[in-house]
Image (cartoon, rainbow, N blue to C red):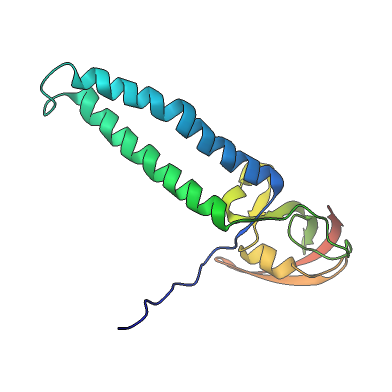
Length: 164
């Protein structure tokens, strides 16, 4: 018998303490608040009679499947994540959790925080450690030049500041 081939994860398993807390809170909310309400609504809809044409019952069951699926994902994901809660010894270089300020050739300045793939938030300038920009700046220091391969071509940047 052949051993099953294990797929290599395409995403990093790092997360900030804030991100870990949010995922745990979402799981708790789904389990303790959202799911019981939907279960109650499905039970009430089922009590109305014929389930085959009962829209509330059908929709409630669909919602339960979605909630259960999300809960299974969160439980699995939380077990495989590594919480990075320490600042690196060498804060002059870019590592996970860093805020990095960069400047392009035209003098435009951008600031990003390198976080785990579960925490991506463009509105807060949080980018995944797996993104091309993060991969380009990891391990680099202030005043280093970096070239980023992007979908619309390459871009050249200079790291102007790093903070944790």
